[in-house]
Image 1 (cartoon, rainbow, N blue to C red):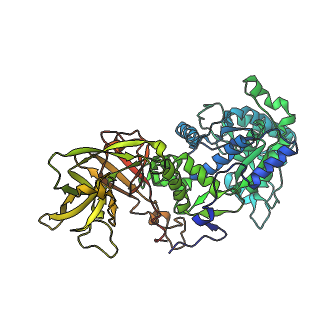
Image 2: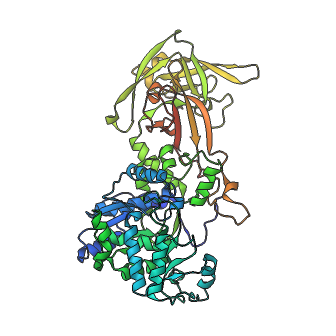
Image 3: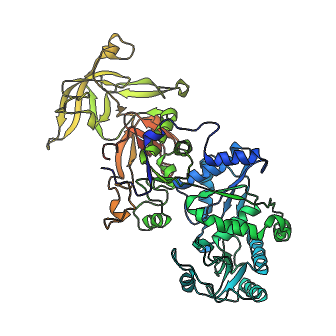
Length: 592
């Protein structure tokens, strides 16, 4: 039985998205806003940005933001920047910066300009001095705990800080001394002077700067103070002339603060604040951006909390950030998900303001649709059973020609060796067949894919009664091109030549969690209690030579088994490693 859908969340199933997909002239409320703005002459073209904080790896939820930010810019003849909102150096790392750039390019996008919030630190500081001079900001000596106490709650208003009425001169002096590094971490903050009785807690005199003497990856030790995210983010958008600042719904309550920062600083009419950028030759298109919120991409059977993902990696519950079971873009890529499949997912899910949980099978269906059309076919055996065709001579070898794709002749053909001894799947033989069985049985016939019809004559067992080998005969009149090639038999199975097949490590991946909502702790359990013990199983199998001799990240359909990809890290032609990307059919439908 499927886990219950959380309150106020709509469950989205595969059937609701089967007919949707990428199409020109996409329709959603954000694109309509852009169309209206262009039609009314507010902008000549949109300027967007994708602004991740480089404090971790991107996950599948970010794919939606990337596709929207870059996609809208491209669709309407605009540009999109990649900007790292690097205002918290204690948690940021160049490793994440590089990974994020790789992920964006892998998804098929490129940026007009690569920017960093740290590029604007001097501008942001000058803007802070302007706010102080205007009486819109003050230096506060309350501790973090005291600030929380003064803030109030959702039902009670906050109280003004006792330092709120400091003079402009005193505030400027203290701010400049903060900038000079005179005070200890956390001793003082610069806070906006807005409204401690506001119903929106984000507007209750929020912090704009805090003292943090931590070296920054771009600016070194130049700054002992760093801007808070809301302040830096809004003004960075304004500096870059972003027209449409697209973000997820959790920032909706932050929009009044976003607009307050943009309006109070008014960069478009404050050229003196932009002087540091001009001196460094950095272009700017200062303007007032418009923040628009959309729903996040939530998928069941996953967790996307950065804290939990960090814990899983740190505690060894997964094999790193690019473990093929992880929802990170690095993990999905290693699993064999394609950029096209993720873009298709974003198109099928659509853009709205309604939070929803997408069924994992929708994601898998997007990958199947892409790989069915674009992945060449190969034969592989992952649970091998030896089959000896006794009516072929010892050492018999021939070459058969196979199509690389049954639906697309442009994929061409390949040569596949065929010999007296073959590997077939153990599950394709039943000594005592169940009702409706259509594969191989003692004394029964089955078609070998592309080779002819065989009969099982003998079952060879070891001393413990385990089947170790089958012996059979190949009907020579059933070979391709012969008169009996069309003789009807109930089943067709695949095979690989034992003399030519290449031993391969085959990793059978599945969903990382066994329940739809691993974040649900209502029964006293945590996501750790819901890890799927069957999410990773490794077997030793055999693949045809044309599968082994391929480049890493090449995707195939292993006929009758599933879609697999050559591992991007460990695959080699002489030691192939394949990861299962997705099964041929949804195996979880009956579980749910």
